[in-house]
Image 1 (cartoon, rainbow, N blue to C red):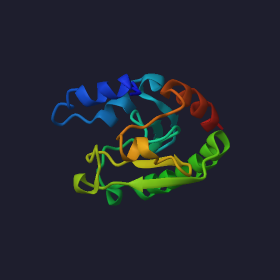
Image 2 (image 1 turned 120 degrees about the vertical axis):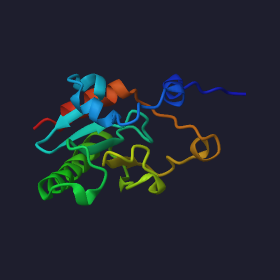
Image 3 (image 1 turned 90 degrees about the vertical axis):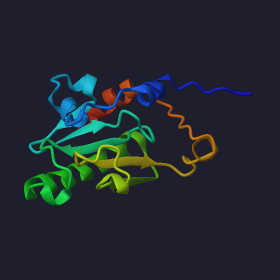
Image 4 (image 1 turned 135 degrees about the horizontal axis):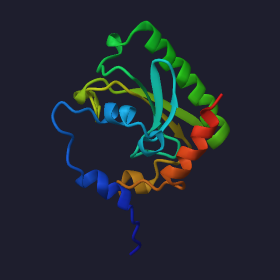
Length: 161
């Protein structure tokens, strides 16, 4: 039998939930250490940060600085910048990872699958044919060829103007 170790996942599974009323995304945005928080770019209204528990290498999120849960609560400027950053992410991820496709997704509300329903965020997930193989489907395990630290360094550099 083969074993695949993913100790970073264990931290996620055993982490204590955030205290009531505390937003983990707001904490990362306000921490003052973008590398530790995986924030790769800051715009006027939104930030781009890596997903700490990615589906694929390069999986990032675009989120407003404002603590809002719904797209209709965002200002027109924040919504416009979010889409501009999504377009920029498409270019950057295409240049850095050469994916065969991308998923862009907003999960609005817990019933829609939002893991952090209280803070709006847009997922940008690079995709390749066959990336949902037996490990993902049957083994419920993802195999990523790159560490988060390497992804952070690569995408932070690529997002700079």
